Image (cartoon, rainbow, N blue to C red; front, top):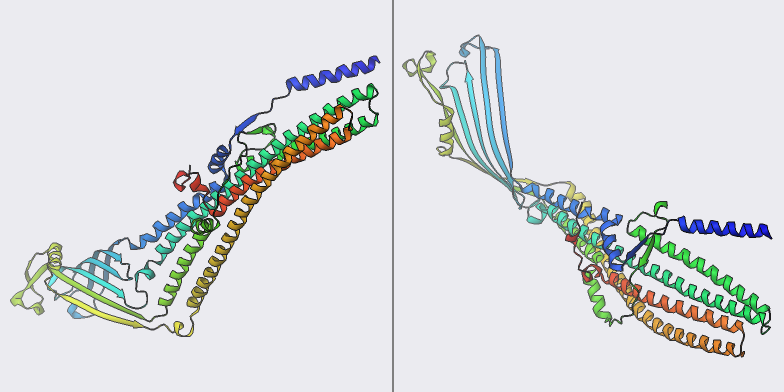
Length: 520
């Protein structure tokens, strides 16, 4: 007997020590909106997707660079030295030096052509005879314009990359909206399921407490001989069963806590194994008047997946238009106008006869005079031309055009399929809202009736008109009715969340904008 007492006191001391020294569970109180805000800030899928619009915007800026002017500067220095090959060269070694400096600016225009303006300067110095200028400077101011008239003509063809990049930017924004909508719904789903698990645990605990109270009462009744001992076994069996239900309910709470913490990108490792989430919000029944046709119209105009496909169709229309243009022959117009200028040290020969080779003086001149003459348009030169080119490959093969046409037809079918899916999802969501509303009302009445039946049965037990077996049955029925009412209410709130997602209005309802998201 003493050994048993020692064992009992040792066990009690261990339990007391573990209770006192065990670290208290950390709690985190969160409302549904708190969870949504945290998820949109910290969720990894959001963190990945938020970068795509920035990339698309950078690609759009890069595609616009084709219409920025291009400035070029060229410099060259050349020295040619060789043995003289005939007597008119005048020296045993022929030596000529060239110095080139030119600059130009080229501008692409949206119709497919280009404009260019250039100024080139040349300085030549030689030891050969019979030169009028040595060294001499030559400058040329040139304007050139080219314009395709058939193939590669038009704003769409030449702004294709910009238009596609702009569509891709819109697509990336709608893809981001899709991820946000999915995240909001996942938070709502995990949060309400956690609320259900917590409330269900309370119902199970209440049912267990009732069973324990009845067990204690039954033992007293057996002690005074009013009930048979078999009634204790029945009550103990029910208590054991409901304790098992409690364990299952606790495991369900842990599961939905982990799911919610994962969506919120919170660590769920060992260091926070004792962290518990306290859900501050409770499900409410707020009756919603939903007009099906209006809901369908809103979904067709708001859903990001439909907008994405519409932008894809715009891109495919553009690709088809460009592919059709590429089947045309090439007819290119070109125009050029240039103004030359010439200056340098002008040589004076004996008797004004260069053939004498006798230089008696010179008039000095510089590069500035040549440039000045070029800008004063002293000499008018121009050329106009048309170039026709017929690509043989487009006569025998129209593969690019065929592919673009099929891609457009495919995307049109896909859009129609998306529209049909959207209608089905909205119909199903509206039906689910109405069905769960009726379920909640029915289970609410069922719970009230179950509570009344249990109360009546307990009164009968007090006067000996029934047995514990029936009281336990009515307790079980009440617990089941409470659980079903709670589940119907949770399902109703989830159906409303699913309807928001199906309509594509979850962000607008919470006043969430793309500009609210920033990359840190």
